[in-house]
Image 1: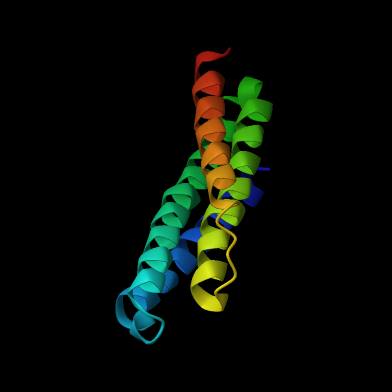
Image 2: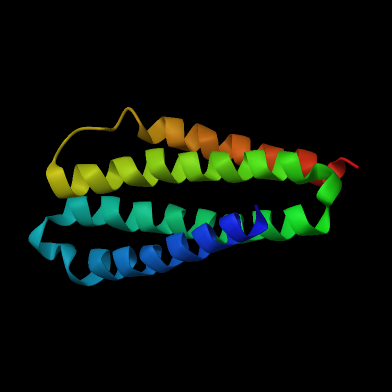
Length: 122
C-alpha cells in the first residue's frame, strides 16, 4: 500500500503544479471566478498529494497502525476527488457541483484525524 499512496501522492502533486500554473497564467480566458476555483483546487490538491506521501511513510514507519493510515489515505483521495474535483468541474464546465465541495472538506478533516489517531496508537 505504501507504493500506491506514494505514487498517487506524487501524481496528484505534479498535476496540482500544472493546474496551478494554468490557473495563474491560462485561466484568464475562463474568468476571474473560475481562476480562483482552479487555484484553490490546485492548492488543496497539492496539500493532500503531499499528505499521501506522509501516509506512505507512516504506513512503513508504524506498521501496527498501517490500517488507520490507509484509511486516512483513502479519505484524502476522497477529499481531493470531491473538493478539488468539484471546483475543477465548476471552473471548466459551469456545472454547479458546489454541494460536493464541503463533503471533500469533511473527508480532509477526517483524514487528518485518522493520521492523528494512527500516530498516537501503538
